[in-house]
Length: 105
Ligand code: FES
View 1: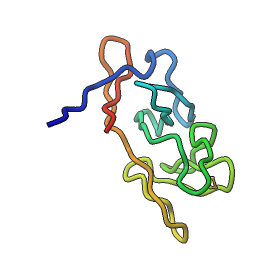
View 2 (view 1 turned 90 degrees about the horizontal axis):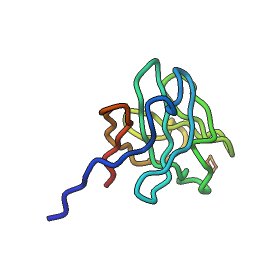
View 3 (view 1 turned 180 degrees about the horizontal axis):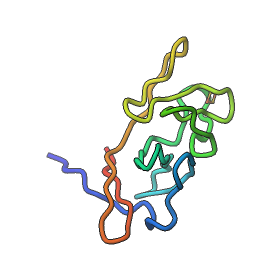
């Protein structure tokens, strides 16, 4: 059985502030890190529409909006808002010792 592990994404001081989104990388995987009212959320950075970089997008409510064609993905479920159909992975996030960690896979 493969056990996924927590990997470091960035320092807490590098994490986005409330209302911000940024790209980060952990274990060779590009991650979209968003701060929704103080809650850090990590999503797959690659938009399922045409591979736009979600970490270069922005927040509308609790959804990350893709900068290319404005599909909006829930930071809780990863599901695209209707009428679009698509979903990105959402990774668990925790803060430990000044680092932001994510659990991939
Ligand atoms: S590539 Fe993201 S909405 Fe088109």
